[in-house]
Structures are given as C-alpha cells and as structure tokens.
Length: 94
Picture 1 (cartoon, one colour):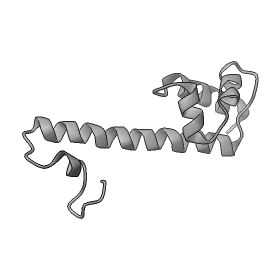
Picture 2 (tube, one colour):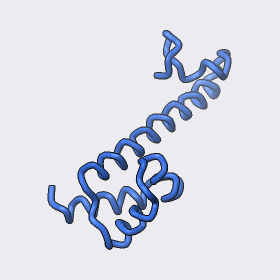
Picture 3 (cartoon, helix red, strand yellow):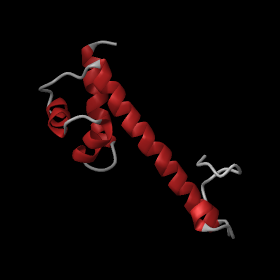
C-alpha cells in the first residue's frame, strides 16, 4: 500500500473513531500529537503505527459489541445477573 493510501486511511479512521484523539492515542500507545499531525497531513504513518491504531479501534469495537449485547439481553427480558451478561457459557467474555 502506498503512503497516500495510508494517510487517507488513518485520517479517515481518526475522524470516525469514537472518543477523543487523546483517548485513541492512549489506547494505541501513540502520542496524541502524532495523531494530530497525521490528521493535519504533516506526518505519514508507519506500518507499525497503522497496526497500533487498528488494534486500538478493533478492541474498542469488541468492547462496544459486548456492551451492546448486555443491553440486548436485558431488553430481551434476561433474568440473568448483570455481572454475567455478555459472557459465554464457560464464563468468559464472548
């Protein structure tokens, strides 16, 4: 993938990411100033930085899906304890 595609992808991901740039940077292990400079077109992302942002966003998506499942189970009349909602039969998050 060329650098222009990387820059466009990371800029769009930053725009769409829930929360603040500070939160995204913290979750990705990247300084927020780097993300700001990317968004402004002043810096280009490396493969490693792209992967870190991807992992942070994927983790957020997973946690959001689990949180939504808890709400769905409650709306569906779940009589289960809230502390165990969103967990699989083996007691793990799933």
